[in-house]
Image 1: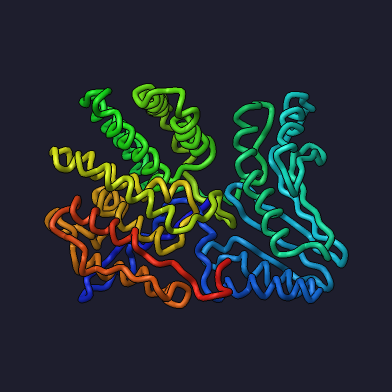
Image 2: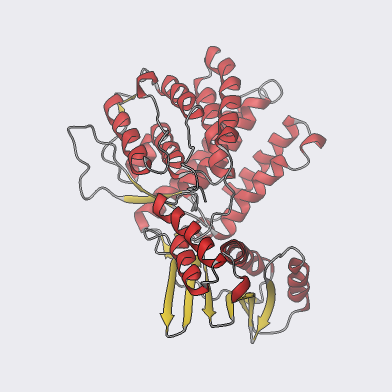
Length: 447
């Protein structure tokens, strides 16, 4: 489940971030971050497959899939054969390629004694699969994918491998949670947060939930039902991005989100808000040891969300901004900021965003949560005297855009239109500019 490696900083043009500035990874992995060179490799893989140069096509495909920064994919050639490993959260997809076919498998859990309920669950899950299947190998539950080499187009490989990788990464946690006879397997490659990061994130996990629940109880539940919904959903997406929990805790975040959006027409906004509040109270009651055991990092190769046209992100931002003005004009600045944050936070949670857009989201989150970033080690702050720093933010924006000038030649954010007088006014001007970003790529370079 995916990750963004972020250098804290944003020093002014006269400053350099110190070498000791900590690197903290926020958010889920997005594979919508490929460089121009990587996207070209995809098209090369397609052309090579059409030319029946299957080995060359496979090599180009795995090169496209590999993220050097995440070190998420390994392909090794051994004579006429290949072996590969693909990392996705707590799971590793392992595969072999011979002259006739490509096979891949991933272990889910160990089942020492046969269990009819477990096997029934897997049988039911099989119906939702398109490329792979659940199976039992010895005492291990696993997922399998195989395809003849001459039908292994880049598209088929991508979606087949993505299916077993993402499904396995999700189902292993659910199976082990639901069936206490099952045991975790092949998850030793995950890395738990350092102690200081764990303590900081747990403290804010508690604080954000407590303070948000306190704030919503101060409001009229009927007349402020819209603002309350924004506060609670923004809290959920903030926890997902800044705390970045995995496993059962991530599943709980997804469940809470689904509680709000499912059967929306059958419940009033007040009722749905109460469902969210109850869910957060339950989450707050989790023992500390149960929460922090899901504070770990892992490598990923596939996003669990899909890309969307920038128009969808712009619509989310515009809708939230329009709903913000009443709160701003009636002196509810905290709710106004939360409403605006929601517009981009919802897109960050729901879609696989281009990396520059995810980096802009991170910039906004640092401005909205400066003490949290400072407590994690940020030394070059984006606020000066509680106001956004024009020099530092402008430089950060330039640093975000520069590496993607070849892939997105029309990408430009007009910093002259940004308002640095307050966090609220900056956020409104910043998000308005993000609405108008152009992520068009040159022809034959989108993948």
